[in-house]
Image (cartoon, rainbow over all chains, first blue to last red; front, top):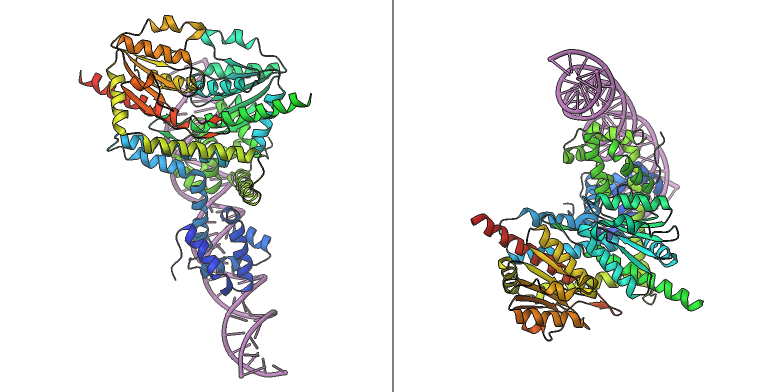
Amino acid sequence: MVAAQSYEELQAEIARSYDRLSKRLKVIADFVLKDPSGFALRNTAGLANELGVAPSAIVRFAQAFGFSGFSEMQSVFKSQMQQETRSYRDRIRALEQRKTGRGTEELVTSFVDAGIASLQEMHRSTPLELIEEAAEIMASARMVHVLAQKRTFTAATYLFYNLARLEVSANLLDGAGGTLDQQLNLVAPDDAVFAISFQPGSEQTACAFSHVLSIGARTIAICDVPRTPFVNANVLFHITEASVETFRSLNATISLAQILAIRTGTLCSERNATR
Amino acid sequence: MVAAQSYEELQAEIARSYDRLSKRLKVIADFVLKDPSGFALRNTAGLANELGVAPSAIVRFAQAFGFSGFSEMQSVFKSQMQQETRSYRDRIRALEQRKTGRGTEELVTSFVDAGIASLQEMHRSTPLELIEEAAEIMASARMVHVLAQKRTFTAATYLFYNLARLEVSANLLDGAGGTLDQQLNLVAPDDAVFAISFQPGSEQTACAFSHVLSIGARTIAICDVPRTPFVNANVLFHITEASVETFRSLNATISLAQILAIRTGTLCSERNATR
DNA sequence: GTCAAGATGGAAATTTTAGTCCATTAGATG
DNA sequence: CATCTAATGGACTAAAATTTCCATCTTGAC
């Protein structure tokens, strides 16, 4: 018997063979089908202990499906898991690598794929509780200041526009004409500050953010990579945007900005209505 | 030193300590912050190989944060990962069961779906020749003026940012402080004007566009609905963005803006090289 | 340029983990 | 109830992975 090499095949194979399995192997099959990521992340001893079976039973289970042993079967689950969390990166990397005929068609396809992957990854990796928390902070603030520079400035204008449209008091800390310092004087302790910063990131944004932290304002940040001072924010969103040839997509960031603005607007209007 | 036990704390701790780390440890920190699931799923040898460092460096990295070794640190990442996949699976299950709940989950799903649909529709409906033509016009212009207001202003800032980054002469006609008229005086016949306008659309943008048409500048427009004066543009992109409860997505527009900027940048640099 | 402190890579030692084998048990069949 | 077959757990072995240690190299100060 040859082992199924793809995750989907394997999953189907286990479900199909279920009736043929012995008592212990059924216990293991139940777990594998119910919690594949648990199977990917743990070792024989741990699994055996949790399931109340012998470690050797786990090995036999793998062998029953044509694998040489547990490790070989587990690697199918591991790579599936990695694909789930990084499938878009792999896809984009593949596109980046074949630069041979980078015509317009390929460029468009790459960006569309990158955008879709970024949106899906944002959906998968963003806990709803964070969205709720962030919206709550913004809705209860006297004013929301939006802080961003360079690349992420675009997303900031969008957040600002949507907040303003929903009648949430908002202010764009754009540092127009080098006046960021003056603008920062407007930030009060009962305000919220929303910062967006991607690598390499503006030094100014980081400084300004540290400053508002010391003021005691509540803070929300969107970063691609967690780094100081943004990790100290009250709410930190970690967004991974796919990139094509050093050009990062912004799809996930602006969509998240829009979602947050709407959620905040909803909370605000609910409150105004009850007053 | 006691190791951070929660994932968030650990992440913050790594980001905070980053500057203190040695060269190799920085490489490892970069990876850990960028791809925590990769760190959770692989062993020292695999990680060391991919990062081009010694396996012992990985162990030292873990010890630098108060862990007894790699395994102890990795377990923090493993459990975080298991939590993430479990909560995501619960969300999907909950969503499948009751389709009526109009909570945050539905909001996020709607926007992600809308964004994906918009990108695919843009890909399907945008002829490559139009992209080439538009890029050609921008690349051969003395200067590219980007014109937009309100909602589409966000996309304009993105186009402007990317053009500037690619060393294409660009100017943002943002009408800051009601100075749009003055800004329009800068538009010469050998310039290109790029307008973005969605319904209901700013009257100002329409007027300004008519004006630059009369000057004789070459023009490009992105519209959701073809209407005057934009139908008279040399190149007209017709973009249909999906919307969620009166909130239109911007994904297709900004992605198209990025593609056009890159294509223009490529043409410009090719020309400068041959000169 | 020299020296010291710290960082690094590689190999050896250790620990952990997987895989094998076999004695025992459970379950089925006549 | 006897007997045979398949399943099971646990001890043992082999393999793989981690961790330690040390020689070498790098870096920065003087």
